[in-house]
Image (tube, rainbow, N blue to C red; front, side, top):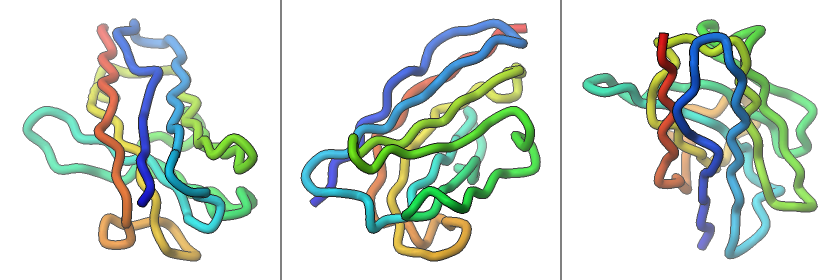
Length: 123
């Protein structure tokens, strides 16, 4: 069993940067594709970014391309989401996910979810 714990969320202003971390415990997640999803109030959970097992390939939603980047440190069993040029529409609960896939992670690929961390961007 894998436990995923997100951290790094908070209240920031538009244009600021923030780095989210997702620490995995229980077992190594090096064999899992890892991703970030987000859910804004009253909306569905959406894909943000994902990274392949070795960290070579990354995928990002069009809405965050050029602003967010995902990375992983398998030695630390941790995944990161670096967010810059934040906008009010980035406000959401951000969830870390581990999945079995060799391509962009989809909701149905996810085997483990974190409980989420709230990011609020004020204008």
